[in-house]
Amino acid sequence: MKAFIAAGGFAARLACLSSALLLAVAVFAAPCLAADGVEAQIDALFAEYSNGSTPGAAVGVYRGGQIVFAKGYGLADLEYGVAITPQTQFHVASVSKQFTAFAIALLAREGKLDLQADVRQYLPFFPDLGHKITPQQFVYHTSGVRDQMALFQMGGKEIRDVLRQEQVVNMMSRQRGLNFAPGSNYMYSNMGYCMLAEIVRSVSGQSLRQFTTQRMFEPLGMSRTFFFDDVRELVPGRANSYQQEKDGRWLRTLLNYNVVGTTGLFTTIEDLARWTGNFSKPRVGDAALIEQVTRGGTLTDGTPTHYGFGLIDSPVGGRTAISHSGSDASFKTFLIYYPENDLAIAVLANTRMAVEAKAQTIADLYLPPAPPAKPQSKPREIKAPAWSKRLPGAFISPAMIALTFEQDGKQLLARRRTPGQAAPVIFLADGRFTFDMGDWERASYQPVFSADGDIVALEQKMTSGLPGARFERAAKISNSTVTLSALAGDYRSDELDVTYSFSVENGSLVGRMLWLVEPIKFKQITADYFDSESYTGWVDAIRFERDADGVATALNMRMVAGIATNLVLRRVSKGK
Image 1 (tube, rainbow, N blue to C red):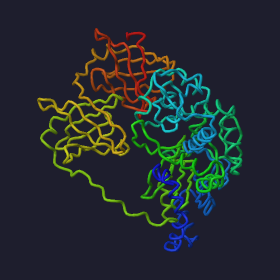
Image 2 (cartoon, rainbow, N blue to C red; image 1 turned 90 degrees about the vertical axis):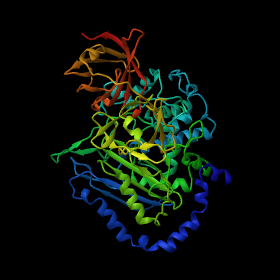
Image 3 (cartoon, rainbow, N blue to C red; image 1 turned 120 degrees about the horizontal axis):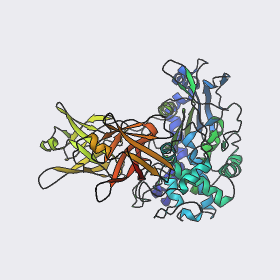
Image 4 (tube, rainbow, N blue to C red; image 1 turned 180 degrees about the vertical axis):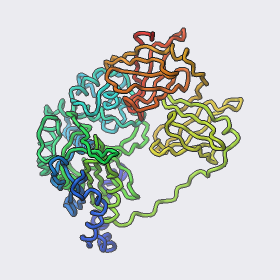
């Protein structure tokens, strides 16, 4: 028991579950007993999807693996008017990952797989990337492998195209670089989970669909759950994905994946009751295995990432929780389990909606109030110090993230992209500063001063506790057509088997590629570094490399959110 507590406390939480539930029933019974009132409140959350003409969602609430609420709202298929029910099969996107990881854990438990072995032991096609990469690093998203969706986009594929597992394998076999050294950082990678599916095939001799059906879904009675590994397959009554246009029309959002491991699971609200029940009363695996898969991982140096076997072990709404969300096309999904209450909630939607927020609202109807948040000491905000006048300019990290600072009247602004996200700089009493760009990772920055008092770099401190980066001051540039013309030409990636062509148009550098419908316009930040002014092809930034004579010979490309970096394109011809 001590080992479980030290490792994350999941077993300890379950051990005290009975007494906790008795207390909850005694003290907070009134809301739970008023079933009609609870249903009315949940109905109100989904009222806009109840008029019989829109897509919507299926909702499930489970206690001890038993359904206490299950209902559908809206239509699974707009063309045929098929209603969503608790039996409707949904594509659940990245909620699939916990099932893939569970299969890996089962194989490891049986001694058929070593989580610490080199993955090349199981995957003959996997390239030598100069580092040992392990199956566990795939599970924890600490392998450093680039994200497959980013690579597909950079290679000119669209999400609406048919994407096959074999293409993912081919793409991985051509890779020659990583985002970072394995184990040194955390970066969500769909590629890693597709590789886990291939490891299951290699070790068991079965496809991921066959293995999970035989070893997990059939024993649990999940008769309508499977990995959808053939896009041609007919699934009667399945939910299709829709988005609403500005003029009010609904259009289908196409999803043509044969890709499994990272995504691809079809399941229902009813089947998920059996899955969540396996957390507290295991029928597949045992308590030790459940402890393993629900415990967050760590980096090599012991830094916690809170990401376990396809599950995030982190409080939600002030309560201890294990959860994961999913998003593909317009499918939005969320599955959350509260181990201290043995309560789980699933929201599966076939159009974009705030499924996480809706699940938390539902949790408030069934659970005791969350304990008050502990006060956290935060550095006091102060007025701009004298050194702030030396901050304007650009700073770039090794991962090709540029931060620029500019004076806007009396306010100093931080800008993530030009002319993208911007926010006022907030100065702190401990000598650091921060800013709030919404979805931008929370961090603070410590200026690094030269002997002359100039700010030469910024040391980033992540709020998550994960490693930060050092942003180096970039030299000022004069954006001239002559300078840009020297960078024009064709640049080829053997890893993606594509060529990008760069030219100067209306004073800006523009990139094109055969399969991109729209060109990519770039904003020059330094002599060699450029930010994308759009998300065309998911390209976020490029940095040119030069030879001893100062001639551009290659460029390094970064994808949006950094899920694929260090991709080198060699110059094969100069611009005209």
